[in-house]
Image 1 (cartoon, rainbow, N blue to C red):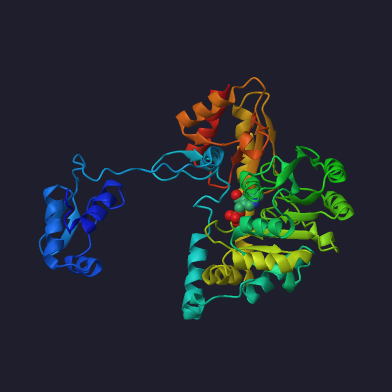
Image 2 (cartoon, rainbow, N blue to C red):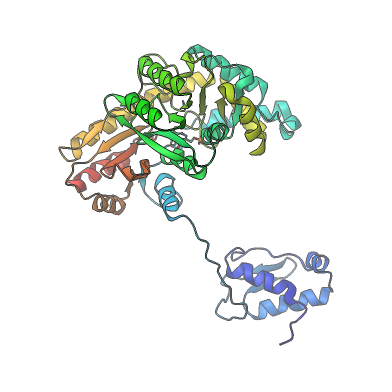
Length: 468
Ligand SMILES: Cc1ncc(COP(=O)(O)O)c(C=O)c1O
């Protein structure tokens, strides 16, 4: 059958309507624009639109133009749309769903996403600071910034680290798009596909995913609920394998909330130095201590340059502010090339916003009250779990950070438990997302970084009752 000239554009419009890209009410391109785009006559375009109107897909609004019908008639073919199935990694997709927010359009009480709840993000402070930056710096924010990051922001990060005795040299500091990018850069700087890295077990899914994407082999080092990271296990692993890097979160580990002592940090460093293994030290929760002083870092004790410390403001300010950093130690030459190749500069507006918050007293003030809120939440959540979950449930009270690690009694059917949680509208992060080996199937993580409304309190109570 001979094709009409107008099908060149009507087929495109029809396909977009059928695939839901042009939704009901969507304004369609003007006759004049289509005439230019398709290098054809006005009458061809008008004929095409009349054809779509006749088929119930499009409506014409006098003096305004053409719109997708409110109820487009999709019953008639021609143009049968072939949906090409897109294969996705099933485990990645499943785990991503379990650890990211499903907020739009549902009534769930989410305890599964390690991000500050909307009410705990200092929205006014952030928006006001962004506006100030825009007002004062204007078009300068639209230029490329230095690939390694704004000098003034780096000065602030260095100043703050020095307060807990972590010395970072300006020439070893990179500003990154969040902590995960910092980890990606750090690991890529010291490892190639097939190399072996050591990682905590349990370990948060996002870190495991970076390891997987880089095609690294993994040794999982146990994190004991009381003693923390097993340094002796790491020593043996390094003795018997060519371990290239170890990834640790010594301050308020996710998901256990454990804080390593300075002695443990030094012992871990000694093993790394003995076997020439790089340390990727995640300090993303370091500012969120509940008691005592802000803990220091492994980097504080390092003179070899093997330690790469990284963090971001995703947990302390807001996850949408994509500002993180990586102190590269001796690996800067390779790391800065990788950073550049990943897209060079982090958005200047975000960098300037964080710089302003760090330079004044705003960041410290916010973190002080946020930490207190988190400590209260953690206390409340531990009490709720103790009161309402089965008697033999093991609950690990965190020393800081966002997370409580819970182990259910051996006789609990966890698939049934998650099913019940789904039914009553509660979400926790299943333990099996925290290792490659599928361990921790009796565990789950509860994130308490949101306000505890009466609804959320009731949700935990009910989940516990369903588990009994
Ligand atoms: C331990 C840990 N590292 C890294 C990240 C990701 O941080 P960012 O959003 O800054 O990339 C998270 C958050 O999920 C985390 O818990």
